[in-house]
Image (tube, rainbow, N blue to C red; front, side):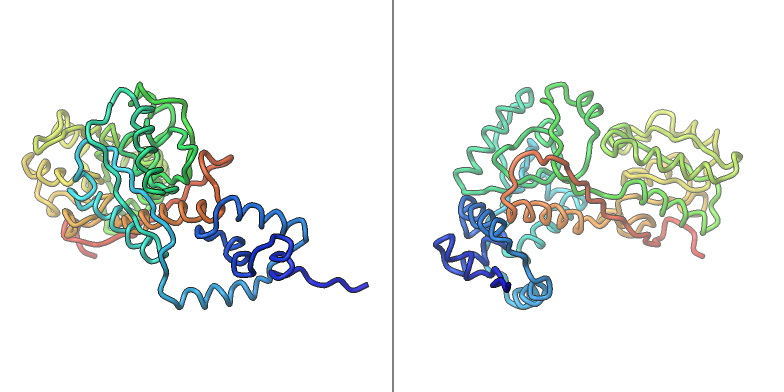
Length: 359
């Protein structure tokens, strides 16, 4: 017996819609209502529809050659007290601009949503206020750039969510006592472990042997101790005479952290890994010349340290990855906390600057 293939026309007849609506629904386009998309998917599955992968590739190429049409709006949730927080520093600005560019390339608009006078003691109340704004604007997808872990780890049940960055649940609770029960959303972040490994390998290739690491407590929590773990793992492959303990560097300004001078004198590093632009000023104030006395590498190269050596972390790429995670959920009509969350890590690249010796 021969069976007629199940195609869009067959599904359209069963669903009582046009073939174009079937095509859009099966591609997950947001100009078809979620209820209609789900109904058409069920009809297609029951009918035994199997997409032709070669045809899908061809159609995707055709659509990619066209200018993207407007699909929907995605929210960038600014939950910081400072409205300009995500534009004030090169690091934060890079994430935001990368997300906006990716959204526009896919036919989406990225709107920054900020609330005045957020209640730092009531995350649930803040989220309810954000949700009312998003619903009023017809926004179903949002990016949470980890301004407040209590918000990023909450159940945004009506929205497709992606978080930028990561904080381990236990560490986040310790840092934010008002944090509700943790909900794990999809995340886009830097490959913290790989970036330290790449930096150490490059420094050693330049002849540095006593590599130290200045790590602030907040960043240790923020990276789920991946920076610390990676650095200690690299040291395991070095002679023990070249091991230097990590120095906790918690100073919010130009004043060198307490204990830094003692650490430098005792362990005599010939190169230092860091994550703060103030580090160079600290070391110079303590009598070190960069790079003559001490090599210096930054783990987050941005405009404020662009002439340094270190890791270009891919700020724009991380912002773009967060948009991709949200768009995928929107197209599949997925909302709230996923059954199993995904973490997408962007690996950085070494860039040679004037804070390390030349080959």
